[in-house]
Length: 283
Image 1 (cartoon, rainbow, N blue to C red):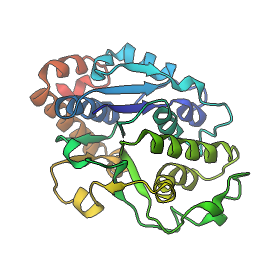
Image 2: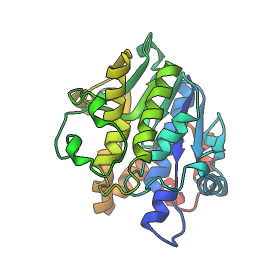
Image 3: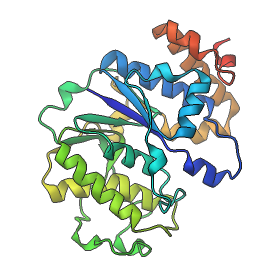
């Protein structure tokens, strides 16, 4: 069961021209837990990124987190891909570079148990379905900056699939989905919305492609289950802004991550604690 993280840094520099690239401490800590826990329970995991990200992780001494290797493949993402509107396009280009079966997993998502038994005979799976909220998942009229992409051929009634974790068992379907999603991304270089275009290409498109392809797709959980004390998954996404707004929450979360790393992965924790931005949380 081969998984991959991804990191495309062009959106960072589009938002921070001339800045020095860095990943926030809580994100580095969840990345470490995500990678190490996946290795322990599920198998190999790789990092597919660009050269800037690869050099950053190497400088921090964190290459060991990915036992499947670190591959700077995302330098070749075309220049006309809008890094502001399509800030997660790197995930789709990374997925396009791999063969199924594989698991696409965000660096803020942790899988605590083996999931292979949940994936039998599936062409694809994602962590949960999402409601079609007009503010997040509007109709085709919202995508006027997409030129030459046939929106009318899609099924707008299917609920989107959240891809914080997404499994692809069928290589033919993986290719169909990534080809379609990337075609949409390339059709909208002037996209002007920082949310709806990206979640359409990544999450709603997955459900639409599955419906059109006739793929056997499943959701592995639902939102009530995901946040209701289940033991399989942790997704930090909704907590990030709360941490940024509250320094005590931020520090407490990072210390708890460090403590978990020390408990479950003591040898790795010694290496991670050498990262200057993370050292205070291991003290």
